[in-house]
Length: 161
Image (cartoon, rainbow, N blue to C red):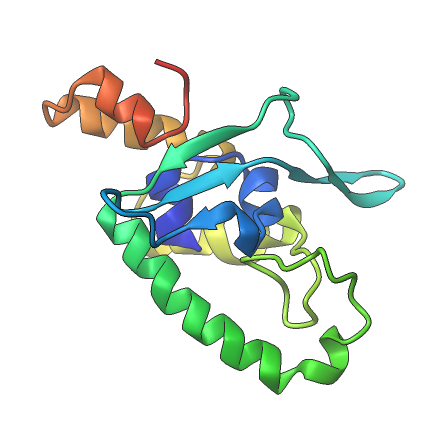
């Protein structure tokens, strides 16, 4: 998840709302594409899947080769995990085939993900603490600072050129 999240730059709720039907890995002439169509949201009254993004507009993100390769490996592990936990996943709605589910097959709470995984990773790596929602911006900036044209950086982050 971390590779795709950092290289594609979606918002936290968007990466957690991606379903396998939104992933294009075998389209000829591309490394792959991620369709951002929905978002997982948490509120004081509970969590729910929005059938749209925060802005109300979906978008497609061209995948870098590293992100596409990571998703292919993840798909194999996902299928093994789903088979291993078949009983727990049995009652889930058929349309929820999340790319990054919890072990129970439900959406991961992004607050827990941030606190239990993301911030410890940053600390262990010696990186400055920042919210996951700002991850896409540094990746666009770093691509730009390496000489990538802005249009290319936007293509791989899903922002409009």
